[in-house]
Image (cartoon, rainbow, N blue to C red; front, side, top):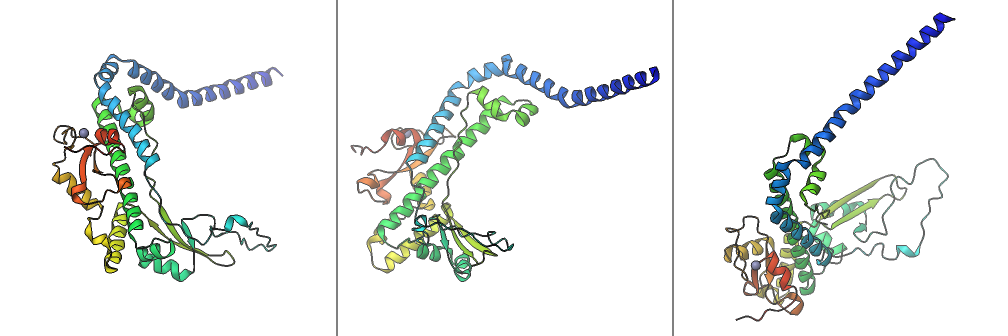
Length: 326
Ligand SMILES: [Zn+2]
């Protein structure tokens, strides 16, 4: 009896010891890391540098606010497919009793960016995406539509530039602290919060259009996707313009608002703001934008004379007011 008690006590002792070692091995490094982290964020060096770059952080946060303004006021959509525009009036139900898993592929009728079509159209769209995009998503070759595509391109490119600018600033802020590797590895978000940097959750919402074929039984599905990034938008602007010119319209009278033109205007203006004269040479991280002097909403055209380079601060202030030119 005594032997059994002694053995079972020993057994529990060994088991508890092993459990304790396992727990210690798992948790000790984490506890040590947390202590080191707290010390780092409370250290004099960290706090002093944080105070030094407070204005850099404040400007970063201003641009983060500007990014959400662009996101909420810009235009980020285009044509729609009509294949499902009345689908909300019906309810589809798969009542098949067979074990064929016929619900593997279900056509998306409710999404306006999805065109449900034959396999042939899916394949043709992969070969000639712009032609099929225009045909099946109702993007007509006329001036208003060209304007809409250009304005989508401007919104996408402004947001792209602003998001990239924020990222560059974040990298530089982080580099200037040169934090220990474990901080960047395990606490990068917390690091930015301690520094006072507001991380923007906004990503560029590139519209995506899909040509989708789903077989009648749902057994197979194939699709072609076209993402409207700046490259695709520029190509679409050119294509629409060619078609309009072919029809002897007024589109040939003005420049096309493309990445190339925006680059040209910035170079012409010496990468400096036409209002406050601040330039890339003075502020390497300066966010510059191409602005319509007379806004499109007030009849301004995308002519070279009606375009100017503004820094984001002046462009933000300008808002929709037409300036008095001297
Ligand atoms: Zn300015």
